[in-house]
Image (spheres, rainbow, N blue to C red):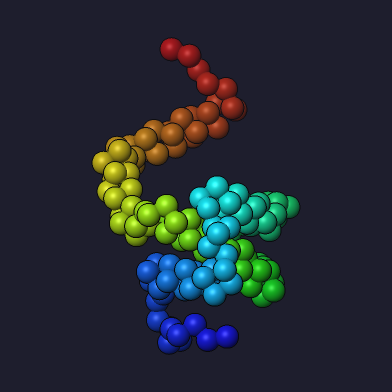
Length: 140
């Protein structure tokens, strides 16, 4: 199957949105693509994604200890979630890219870098203090 995207190029949300709309239309699935149905299908895919990690314990970034087949399966399940999310946003009339950028901006206001670093440093101080006191916290 060809995607129409040259190897190594990025794929835009707009391209995915169009591909998913075409895919549904060609199969006469638009009638089933209601917000509720798409959301429930996406939640099912999130469940399948979580099953991949269920018994793995903590996983290192880049999943270096995973077999190639496991990495491929991970990519497939992540893709299922993304594709349902893109389709859901399209059906709901939400520009997912713009909404995501807006959310990043809102998060930057809500969680300023300096304040977040201060909280992390404070948590580390408490953890180090707790460890130094054999896990007990002294009260002042």
